[in-house]
Structures are given as C-alpha cells and as structure tokens.
Amino acid sequence: MAKKNFYLNYDLLRQKMADIEKAVSLLEKIASKTLEEFLSDEVLISGAKYQLIVAIEAAQGICNHLAARVAKEAPVSYADCFYILGKNGVISEETARKMASAAKFRNLLVHQYGKIDDRKVFEILRNDTGSLLRYVEEIRSFLRTVE
Image 1 (spheres, rainbow, N blue to C red):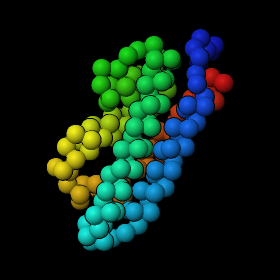
Image 2: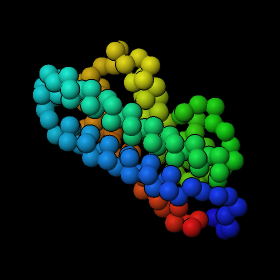
Image 3: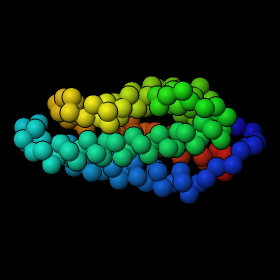
Image 4: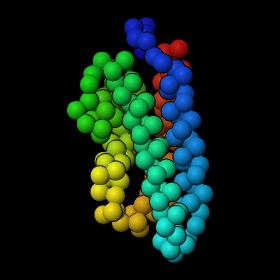
C-alpha cells in the first residue's frame, strides 16, 4: 500500500487485539481439560462460550473499523466484513474465510445459545482458536505497512 488516505484509531485496534489475545489465552486453558471434564462443568462451558463471543466481537470491531476506513465499504453481515478485508489485502483470503466462519458461529452463540452442541464448542477450542491469533498477526502486519 503506497500512501494511506485514511485515519485509523490505533488505540481502538490495539485494545481489541489485546482483548482477542486475552480471550484466546483463557480459551486455551479451558481447552487443556479433557472432553469429559469440559462437558461435566457448566461453568467451563459457559466461560468458553463467553470468551468465544468476546474474541469474535473484538475481531468484528477491528473488521468494521478497517472495512470502513481502509476499504471504504459497509459490510452487509458480520461474515461479509471479513471477506471485504480479504478482498482488499488487509488479511489473507484463508483468514477471511476462517473469520467469516467464526462470525457465523458467534451468531449461533448469541442468538441460539441453548441449541449449541457443547462438543462442537470444545472442538473449536482445541482446533480453531489459532485462527483468531493468525487474524491478529495479519492485522498487525497490515498496520505496520500503513503506519
């Protein structure tokens, strides 16, 4: 990116990235439990769901800010926002797909909380939280190119 012609709120972006990293750290602690320990502990299940919401909401906040300021586009959905960043080279296409999927899962967590399969939540904790950290790293990399 040659010359930036947009204003970014770096404090907001840094805070949201820190929120994601803290949530993922907590999720990793929960993921260290066995499936049986996880499924038998409603506090762990609830904490995992809440931290997933926190992390994905923070990612969404970053996405909305960058879509508006950098891409100058308004997303039509939570998932669409990540595709906008991917299309504009802010994040990779693969990360855009993974984050769009996370945004869809966030919608399930928020709107159909009681219908979520807790085994699926545990699977996400074990296999997919790295996507959130990769997103943060790609955002940091992008920000270094425009600072």
